[in-house]
Image 1 (cartoon, rainbow, N blue to C red):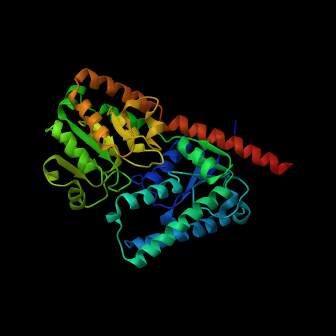
Image 2: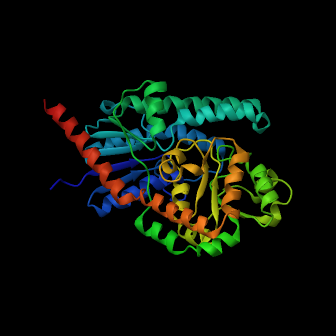
Image 3: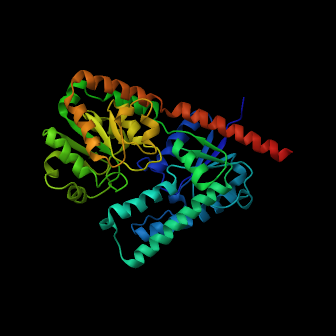
Length: 395
């Protein structure tokens, strides 16, 4: 029997399941431990235990984090077989890190693709640019450093772990990297998926509710500029439609201001929630809307599918890999707000039998994204690469 792997997870966020990046490692670590593997973590609060509310200090800490992580690894490298690190958090060579095991750079959203969206957004919504000249210079240098750190981690790793097929194509065609890579989706814990499904109201109750839900931070990337028009178009055809926004991480006044007049009456906002509250929050929702322009994966899409809620999404990295086989008719060209709204309207106004079928297919689609088999497949791939490394070192 293979010995348990000793795995170190490295991520430059707090170890908090409400944060998308950290949640990937938290869920994986739980599954790996169930299989007998030994998992430790090094995260932002290990490097900087004292919290800060300053955006610039936060940015500075992210810049310094790779050096803190490298110092920790040099002291502890002998204790690990695998280091599974967020891309950009380790920018030194394995020799410099004094590490002879498998070094994995994991993407939870390739920075270059996010940067391309930001450039497009600056042209499309120029009024959204904020801050003074010094601030823009500071953050310009910061993001330039993030890009450089991401590319350095790609150069130095043994294996890239990517969440979607578009990132692999971008890695080969745009960045020009031939580094070994695997594409591995994210999943849900079995208990969480079951809780989402079991909490759901009946199809007839949901269809009668006419409630549209969204999970995600309130940002341009997640479609903040599109939502006002989506609401206007949907309510013009379905006046009783209600909207639920979960996890916006923004002040309610800001969200309602962006949505426009009337948002108080038919929009419910839940800026923050605990993960175990999600099944009940989604229980009577009819359809989910996810107008995000770029994603690493989109766990929120899988969660809503697992609750039996059909998800209308832009046809972009992440949601594309989740929906294109099982529910391709729910994918819409990015920015096509009219078509996006039309699909929502059709689901709300068709009939209960049509909705029941969509609900069934949604639940089936979510079953493909389960952490136990994904965690097993990941460690099998890590073992294979680790054995190859050790074989090469012996020769």
